[in-house]
Length: 310
Image (cartoon, rainbow, N blue to C red; front, side):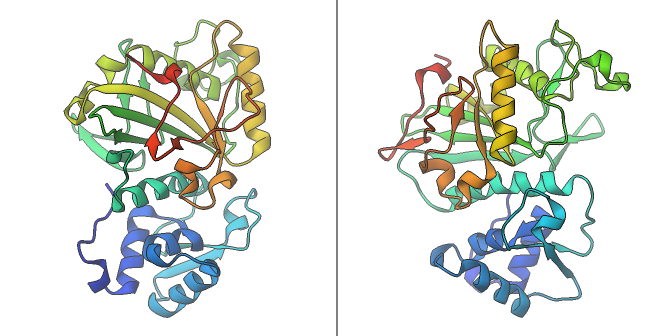
């Protein structure tokens, strides 16, 4: 779960930053600024965060490198920071993208909102103990014994007492959008959920599993009952760029000719300001609707009737 400082103004700045890095693993300079200087976001935020990091962190523990070295899609002049004990590996770009979605959730937890509150959230790189095994904290089991491991799960409580469960998939382009199990040499990546034989590591296979989860929502998501009656489930795919998102949307249209999946899509660039995640028109449906829409409208959390489980 996210770190919580009761009196952050009394915590040494370098400790505040390093404690966050221990939990988040990778943050770019804008992330650091939002986490530590939330009340004073203004022009020059990147330069201010860089100066802060240079002044308040212990250089023997902190490393930095240009964002484009971690992810070829990054085109802005920011640095990525991590502690020396946090090794850079193939999962690092994925972790950084998940953190982009985690950031607006973290900020919402700090500030009361008239349309709802974040009651719960977990990311897949946190772990739980189950039968002596360490499992991703976001794991969900379907009734046919298959499983889903979202990259991020969070629950929003609405003013009327109902809840909306969000499942997020962060896509860095390492998995195919559509692939058949027969084309994959490693049999372990095949999970027989789709009669068309999709490989379980492709995005379309994930969409099918999420649709099954929605159909079994009240049973699968019963552990969230303590937060209130389930009103809707939303599944969002966050992509690194527009081109990848468009390819995914078109592939969905081709594959699901009988019934389109109930998911929404966006890209990392569309919410460089974390507040845009809720209030800006950054989301699109897989129906290829050319008009993006926002999740927050007129100070209330509005969602299309298509998402309702009632």
